[in-house]
Length: 89
Image (cartoon, rainbow, N blue to C red; front, side, top):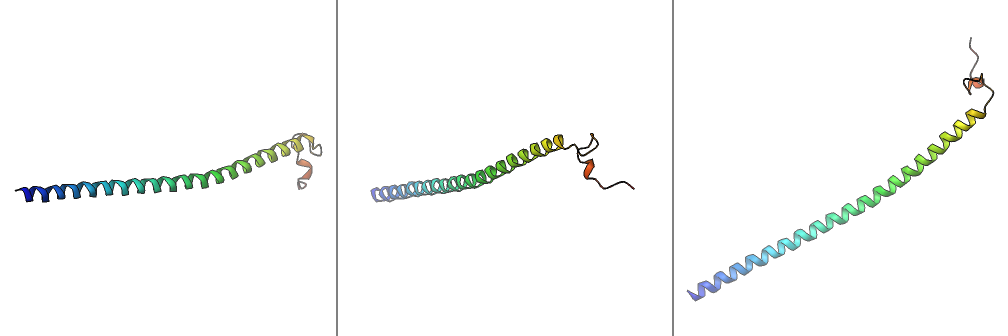
């Protein structure tokens, strides 16, 4: 029976070793997924930053247009752009 106990012990060790390897592989896989996720987040942050710049530029242009409309006295006083409208027939 001693030989059988030795063989069974080796089998248990092999099983434990395999489980350890699988756990290590799963951990590596999760780490790679986390790296990909971090890279994705970095890429999208750059895109969001570009959109923020666009929104800032758009807000600045909107303010400039409002200021322009306030200073444009060519219209009828109600519509600042009425002076540029084609004549009504």
